[in-house]
Length: 512
Image (cartoon, rainbow, N blue to C red; front, top):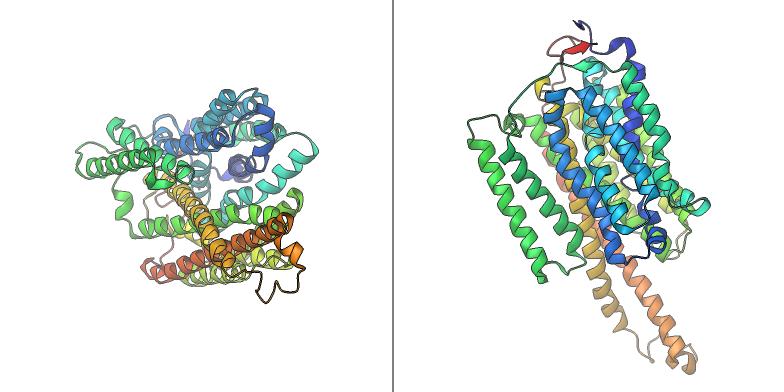
């Protein structure tokens, strides 16, 4: 065995990049591809809507708990072995999801999917940072962002097409060939990293896992259980808060190696980048959660068309990645991130003007601009967050970076869904109280039509749709304000980029 003296993995950089990106896209795609198939799965397995939430919840909780553990595992057995094991487990779990004949079977398979797939995205980010010299980190992060963002954006379209034209089981079977190709590529070309053995901090892992699991469960079950009017939600919130408190105190006071090193959060770029990625998770995934129901339920667009209308968001991100990879290093990184937040806020402002009679052009253009904004934020942010962090903390740092993004997406989705439900009820009441048989807009209707049961039902349907649209607009406005409030924090980022010396501080890689 020999230690590579040039940028790690340089002889096979292209093949390594293709292999890890294939795995990342596969895992990121699975975050949203199953959502549109849930009604078909529910009918096929004869379950209730309440029971079907566990198909999503089991995956989210398992992935959230396993994500911070992936950095420690990479130090113990090597990043390559973690990658290979994760790909095999995720591929097998996908096949088991497709084969499931009952609710317990698909929940167990989704749990396994989450456990195995959690390491793929953070480890792929660490791999791309290690195999590229610092001056190419922006381009490498552009590729990584493509997998992280394009997957969830294309998921509904691909899932809808597979469900409509084939069967909901193909939503999971589609992962198998990609998993096989990714496994062969990683096995053939990726070198192993040097091991960094450390004692396992069981207390730190247990408290962090308990905090994440209870918090995710609270977010997923909150709307269903009417939030803090439910004893279950109070128990989950209390457990999450207590476990997080114990984890933080243990991390800061333990004399042994903590599960998560506090050194990560002493780095100003990493800490600020973590705040930004939380906000990106909130805005990006909350928007993706709102749009499909809006387009299908309020505008009556079919599933496949709904997926196609969200695709321009991915096109915008691709364009932004190409631009950013070329201008980073020439323009202040903070200005690029600020421009991205401004574009994102502008797109959300456009979404506040959605209405029931609109055509698809407003959806397409607002999505395209938001994709541009997300790309301008995400690509430089992913590079600058790790610009001043020691490479020996890279596995741990990328795991925490992905975990914080996932927590942000969970918080964002829960908040907007809750506000959507409550604001719809409030707006329905306000609109309905303005409608009387003597109202200016109702006097032209025949009296029988205005008072008959069918006429009242139709009127209530129109009021409900309008109330839901106003509630959606209010959610978009909230996310726009959050995006604008994040812009001043950009001043906290350091503008310094990594050294251009390809060997300085590089993670040593053992060529086997």
